[in-house]
Amino acid sequence: MADQAERAFQKQPTIFLNHKKGVGTIRKKGGSAGTTPSKSRIARYTRNIGLGFKPPREAIDGTYIDKKCPFTGNVSIRGRILTGVVQKMKMQRTIIIRRDYLHYVKKYNRFEKRHRNMAVHLSPCFRDVGHGDIVTIGECRPLSKTVRFNVLKVSKGPGTKKSFKKF
Image (cartoon, rainbow, N blue to C red; front, side):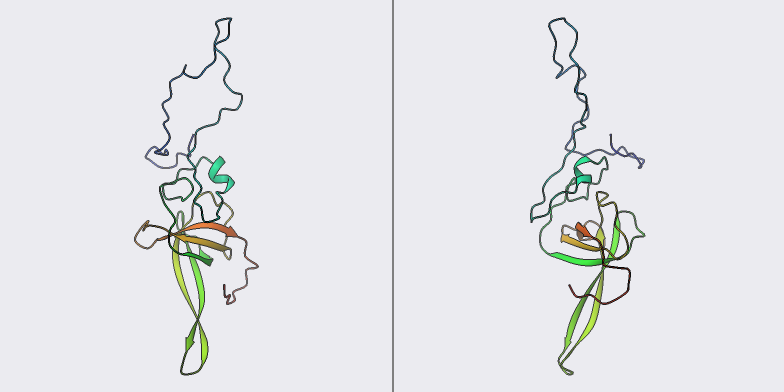
C-alpha cells in the first residue's frame, strides 16, 4: 500500500484498488481454493520517460505516490535537458539548484562568471540527494508558480568545496 502521510487518501489514478476477492484463484480437484502467490506484488504504474534515462529502482519497487514524478506520475519531459548543483533542500519535494555559466564582455574581451538559481521538483524516488550533488533536470509543464523542471538523474558531487564549475 502507498505511504499515507497526507490527509487525503493517496493512490495512483491508473491503478484500480478494489479487485474482487475470489477472482483469479485456481481451484484444485479437491474443491478447496488454490493458494495465492507467495509474494503478492502490489500493482504499480511506472513508465519509461525515454531520452536515455532509466527509471530508478525506487520508482519501480517503492510505495510513494507523487503525481508530479516523471516516472510514476502524469508529467512528460520535453524541451531542455540541463545540469546543475544542488544548493538548498528546505522545501518538500522541491530543491534549488545553481547553474553556473560564463558571460562574454565584448568591451574587455573577457568572460565573467554568472549563475542562476532554479527551483526543481525532486521525486521521492531519489533518496540520497545532498547538498553539492550534480543533478540532471528535464523541462516539463509548469508544476507550480516557479517550478518548470524535474530531476531525472542524480550523480554525487566531487566535494563540498564552494567553487565555480563549468558544465
